[in-house]
Image 1 (spheres, rainbow over the protein chains, first blue to last red):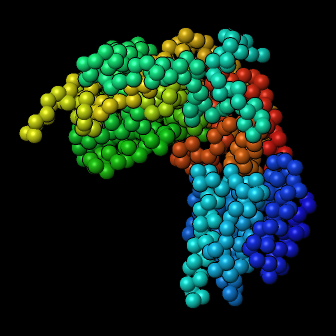
Image 2: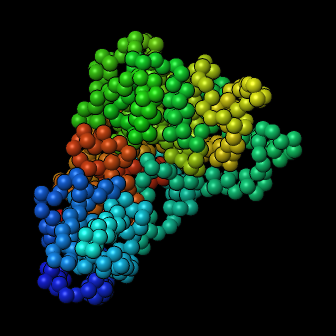
Length: 155
Length: 408
């Protein structure tokens, strides 16, 4: 599946800012012609990335959406915040992969200030509507909350 | 082959929403157990009410108010006739099933003592568990549960063992919302009455498919929502035997429910108004009556027969998919299929089906104890109505196959 390599490489791309990464994701998604291709790509992302260590898949780290479970773990490495996450639903997992790619390995301050409009631009808005019961809205909130907490710690 | 017992194409024409497209595909609406669609006759009734005789009821001296009151009370009589209640005052308009259950649960607060027992079934919707837990907290009564088996049926032997002189109330749904199982409520009611317990049956999922006769059932309370049977949301009915409704105290205070008010003492209105505080959902009640007229004109026997044929066809076609498992595969069920595919999350399947224009419900269906019993996060639930077709079943099945190919 095209695109996967780029995704794997992102981890090394420590220097890219959130906005740049988001633009890159938008570019990638612009290649897709319809929802089927977008979904197939997300499903592929979801399958390819084991994202969180089993030890962190605890009840404390769970974000309860109504339907799919989402786990998030955050750790400070130097002055950057690293997120790992997982879900029991594969499409949710694919979207998580995209969110992690955009927000992980970034300074807490940048995460706090980051916009999430790129999700609309890649045609996944429906998954992030507050009434969608998949835990993703809560997940973004949680990423930002972690950033706020670690920002305080850095200060 | 489905032997169409009525003209399905002309029935579909009655539902304007069935013509729309979703995500570029023709809508295949298979979430009828959540809410049913609304036929034009009901929509017209709503428009007619607001266009021609919208007024507050039961108190106006003017003609419009009288007209609205008459039509609203006629709707109550239609509901009474439909469920074969002995008297119109045994029909209480509610905002829906949940409201009806809470009204009864609240009323029993003053009738229960510490150590009394309430029995609920393991097949309940959350709305039929939580009010009883709250009632138990208020009164010190104890909640007992009728267990279920893997086929999604209640274990009746266990139920009979739970019954005793301490049992004061039994609550059970007529049809399980998560699985579609039709529960043996005749047996449940008769056995409860032998120990002197009252029985409330949640008819929300049964009413769109089965015409319940409350006198024949000898049930004490029966609750339904209009929106699951072609009516609007926000209105429903509580049937209660007159003797029981007289025993229960009013639920909410307000206008309509009083006979006389002084600062020293208020006396309550007669049934049914005692339980209908405030201005009711007048238009909703009238539209509920129109929905019953519509469904009765088609006929519940014809509806049941057609839906069973759809159910059998859909079950057979879905089971042909490798790795697909149906939960609650009993003989006695309404047209509901709750399923999973091995290795796939129901949310993923539902998301792809939605993209293909197929509306199903995914998740725990507000019945977490049932999902815990099967040790699954939830299911995909396709629930059929008399306006669904065999062709729509085919679209469901091909869409599920497509989702499986994409996801696995």
